[in-house]
Amino acid sequence: MSKAVIQVNRLVKSGPTSDEGGRVASRAMSKAAVHVNALGVSSSGSDIGSATNASANIAAEVLQRSPSKVHLQGGDAAQVSTSPDSKYHGKRNQSVSVDSKQYSGSRSNLLQSQNSTLNRSSNSLAVDQARGEQAATLQHLEEQVAAITESNKATERATGKLVDQMDQMKADHVALVRKLEQIDMQLAKQKTTQNALEANYKGTEGELVNAHTALDEARRHEKHAIQSAKAVQVQYSRHDIRLDRVVGEVDKVKNELKELKEQKGGAAVPRVDFERVGKEVATLEKQKMELVTLYKKQAKLIDILKRQKLHLEAAKNIAFTEEEFKKTLDWGM
Image (cartoon, rainbow, N blue to C red; front, top):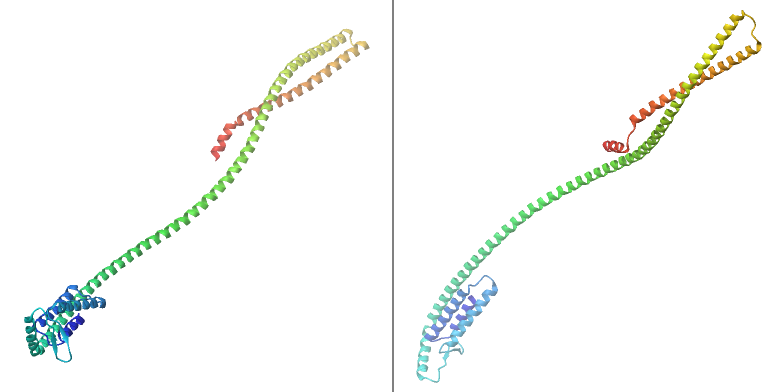
């Protein structure tokens, strides 16, 4: 803006002008100053340069629109061009040029004072406006810095929470891995135990089958033993009858022999009869011994059958069915 005022001053100070030229110059300078103030010049050099050029253009345009043009022709001599249409304007311009020579000094001083005042006022306005804009910009930047700082703090807090969550998740992961390993070990132990139980079950099942087979065989032996005992008992009873008969016959023969001895008074018995009776007695004694031996064998067989019966009863008491055995294994597992 100062450059624009200087250019206007140079245009005004270029030589002695008329009163109308001075007024035109004053109007140009005031319009330039007003235009500069209206632009709201900022503190940057580019805005000041544009405002300066604009004020200079306005001043030049106003001087071109004035009815008289000022031309410098060496030193203080000034020549005013007159329009060919009116002689009146020529005379007036000549009088104005004479008067302008007399008052050029005072007018130039006045213009210089006005220019300096305008320069100071425009400079102060520009500085105040620049300060206001800088203060607003600084406040806005401070607000942005505060907002960014708060955002950074919030982000740091969120990051800290996420880090804590990550640590907790890592600890949970380690705990779950350990628990999984323990579960795997327990499963392996249970699998080993299950395999052992299955093997034991198969072995016990085989033993159970063998026990059933032995039980069936024992039942068959029991039936056969019972039948044999009945047959032996029948035969024993028959032998008892025969033994009783033989004993009775022996006693009868003895009695007869005794009677014969008594009747004959101790006379000798015929040899044939004696041998016959001796043979009969020997035969009866032999039959008696056989019957006694048979009786002992029958007694032993009866004892054996009684023992087998006891064993069969014990086997019945301890016999398990397959379903009961499975239930027992299930209870054990």
